[in-house]
Amino acid sequence: MEHVELFFKSVFVDNMVFAYFLGMCSYLAVSKKVSTAVGLGAAVIFVLTVTVPLNWLLDQYILQEGALSWLGAEYADYDLSFLSFILFIATIATMVQLVEIVVERFSPALYNSLGIFLPLIAVNCAILGGSLFMQSREIESFGLALNYGFSSGIGWFLAILAIAAIREKIRYSNVPAPLRGLGITFIITGLMAIGFMSFGGMLTGGDDAEKTPEGGSAQVETLSEETSKELAQNETLEVSDITPQ
Amino acid sequence: MGLLSKKDSKLILDPLADNNPITIQVLGICSALAITAQLKPSIVMAISVIFVLGVGNVVISLMRNIIPSKIRIIVQLIVVATLVIIVDQVLKAFAYELSKELSVFIGLIITNCIIMGRFEAFALGNGPWKSFLDGIGNALGYGVILIIVGFFRELFGSGTLFGIKVLGDSVEKTGLYAIGYENNGFMVLPPMALIVVGIIIWVQRSKNKALIEEN
Image (cartoon, rainbow over all chains, first blue to last red; front, top):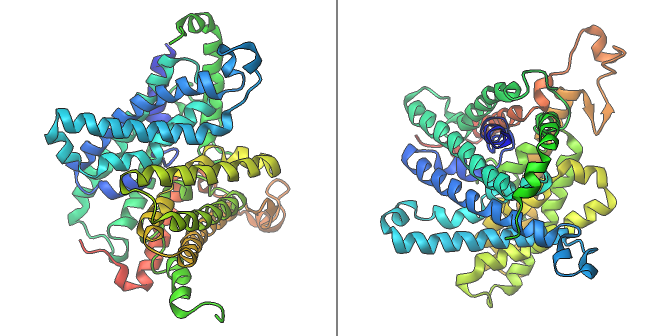
């Protein structure tokens, strides 16, 4: 059940764009037309789905404190988490390069339509952000990591699709000249973010704390208390799910 | 400026307004929005980016003739990731509470488009001193926006600056609160950051008509 909960939480409540502002640069640059937005969104979903579980494996078996104990008991004290940034970004850059090669070989039409966006995904903050959030929230299983990668991608895709559609529609509106283009997009995204905040009570029944000075992460803290109680009940299931890869 | 020639001082001053990385070049938006709920994290983030971009620009510029073109993105990523690890460890050692607040956004400096953007656009084609100035200039431009947004969000959202209550005490109803003023709770929430930056863009483009986009 927590898979379903994680899915809806990542798409609506913890939306990569509206709650955490990840991937904003390409979100703003690519959202002038719906067709390019769809292409980039699909590529982001794919890269997130692949890299988050891979980085989970890296974190679980190499980076975490005590993770190296499978090599031998004398390695159980090593804590390599300071290498997380380099290893995560290396995995992401490699995967994106691989994806580029595969797409070019098997579907040249798709490759041409994505153009420059595919290599640019490697430096999209949403991709690295997905892996870093997976690490800081201590996601417990490979399946949950896969779920989280996929659903975060879907959330980002939803956001860029919506803003591209709105930008196409307001092209004929009377936007004040200094606000035209970038300014109005910021304000519309802000209003959409306010709209998405209404999903905050969706998984807890409505009584979570609203404002703290910590900004977006506030809602996440209260929600994860509820889900962590549920996860504790399901813990026996989770342990048997993790098999050595 | 006695030290710097006119062209060099342009490298620092341009990104502060006319070529601002956030409002004109549309780079580095993510962290500008996420951590500006208070002034202190904004300033710490600005200083971190100044360090990473300044040093990174110099390093890439020194290596610019020996990096093979095919792997230059990977080399850039490694340089940035190393500098960010240094910043992260320093913060964890000397300002642990703050590093917890900034959490993943220090790591996200690696993918901050300003850094890769300036590497590609400037450091790969220019000498070390000019690259250093360009890095400092762009990071300062980024910092200026961060500080403005952080200032207004903290002031109107919590009535404090740097944690010091400047408008009076909201619980005991002193200062401005005595006449019925209330904090705008919305300001500390993420969406307001977007709207504040939108307003900054509005003000900037009204003053400088050349920056207005064609439809």
